[in-house]
Image 1 (cartoon, rainbow, N blue to C red):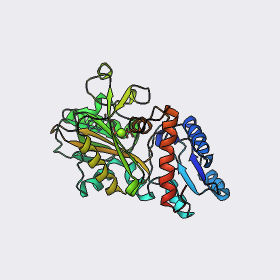
Image 2: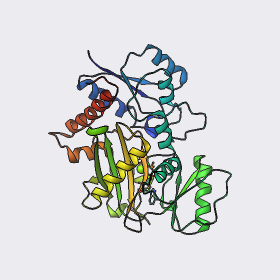
Image 3: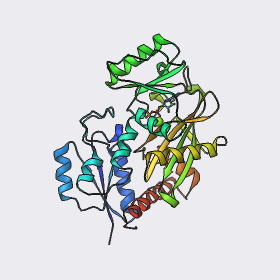
Image 4: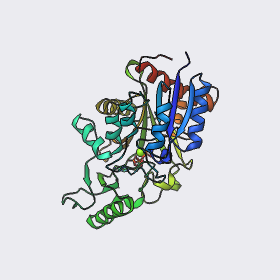
Length: 330
Ligand SMILES: Nc1ncnc2c1ncn2[C@@H]1O[C@H](COP(=O)(O)OP(=O)(O)OP(=O)(O)O)[C@@H](O)[C@H]1O
Ligand SMILES: [Mg+2]
């Protein structure tokens, strides 16, 4: 019998998940081309989600949303968020990707750091300052300030790197007022940037490291991926010649500690001591064909005859692992 997948997206699909509606449509076409029946549910709110799910007959849902939201600009994740994975668990409908608990752990970078640190994974020094809280006295400089729950480098500019207390206070206040969420203070990691793709589970799992570079002329004061360098075709990914095994090991430890499933991407940077540290694990990585880092990394390791074929093969790998996990092999 033909297997069936339902893609769930909505206004937050780009900020939270794999990309905008155009990306969802390509994904839909790709899954149908693989011989799996696929359709799209675009939901604005809980009522629309419930209407769709009441009639759904799919084997698996694949969601570009962590939670239902009408916001297109930021992830946000308010305290009363209605998490897609919780709503699907309540209906006993399996889904592609990590469990509800893991999704929640991944969206808040401070929580991700705490879980990884407890499991002995190398993470940067980190402190969370929520709106209304005071910044602790002893912060080592230079430090890096970012929103606790965003993606796509939202809120990241050269001002994120702070060298003293005055710059730190100004940037923390900016995150609070402009993005309405906690500010995460980390040690500034001055070295190269890596992103590591985790695909599949158990013995079939693959961990594929990529090194991310941007032409030096595009950097300002610091070699960081500012928001204006993201999503515009300026970043390049290559197979790393240094830190390869270290990146694989770090990603494996992190994704094990966080109990990640099917497809995640772990971002890392080299610290002042020359060692890699994880800066975040993306629970719903970008899936824009050719452009997003996951398909780019996959292409480096599994080149087929065309980039479209690479993309199809990567999506097939994710589907095979997720269907195997729910006991309905493709
Ligand atoms: N501690 C740090 N030190 C130096 N640079 C950092 C640090 N944390 C983040 N950055 C820079 O900011 C960028 C965005 O940070 P991060 O990956 O944490 O957030 P994101 O916006 O969620 O990313 P994604 O789009 O991958 O979801 C990184 O790619 C990196 O260049
Ligand atoms: Mg990142």
